[in-house]
Image 1 (spheres, rainbow, N blue to C red):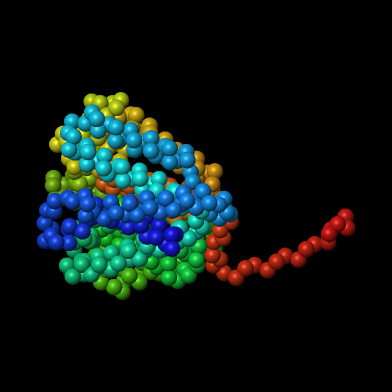
Image 2: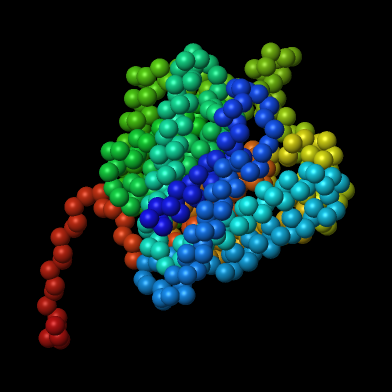
Length: 427
């Protein structure tokens, strides 16, 4: 029950964002005044904190057993150092209201990450991951069905998104669905079920038209294949089933036309030949359409140059009227936390890589791949809190990396080789 509860809480924390119950009474697309007490994330973090106390209690009552999750003090220390510094930068921010709201966001991130590490103590690591990825796949599967219904009802011409969220966020959620399906395929088998689910997640990400999100998914899947060391036989099976699933959807369902339109418009014209296809002066420069992010990036870089060492302070970017956020995690940290913030963030990533290498025997490829997916996706969409899944997934991958878990076999086991007689007469 603790493993299932921890997995469910963690999955909802990753997926829910800033959604709150007060939105239920609001009209569709209406501006809603934030109510922190009614936001789901607050109660999820509190639930994780309660499970953390149970983990500490179990740690005090008995020793660890093989296969149970382990705490990672260096990673937690690096993470708290980074988040603590960013919160401290609120003291030199130009606007207290903006900065305090962001301090609240980052505090929840820190408490949740530490709480997960403690709550997983003395729990079987595979069950913790099963609970998390099971909840992720179920929730994102429902969102996928909702998005498909809305897309088909609208004629298939709009970019895919649900529940008021943007296409970039939906692409990230579909990427998590794909990674969850790959997780269950690797550890449980049933390729006939999970490979088509993963392929569906990739296709729906393409339907959003999110180029950054789609590239992040491909990087996440590649990371999964490398970390999990997928053998050639299973890789060929993965490729074959995914190709069949994509071909069937593209040729035999109404989503085929929408998929073709999304690829032609977002991935070809706006990326490879934007100037020539925009009906302008017929230029063949082939510039990339960045949805105005180039302006935000330039503003963030200039703000960082004006305050290079310690940054302009937490939430300085929106406080100065430059935009809601820079749509790039590293640029956001640079302009608001300076070089010091960037070094601390790099320290978190380096510490995680070191922990992953030390614990590589039990490392889960899907969880690491999901962390890479969120890291790359955060360079084109969202702010620091929107990248919360990155920090939680790094902690999750590290604490659940225990040796001894065997992946599912895609075929019957090979026969044992007969022992050869020894020339020395030894048995």
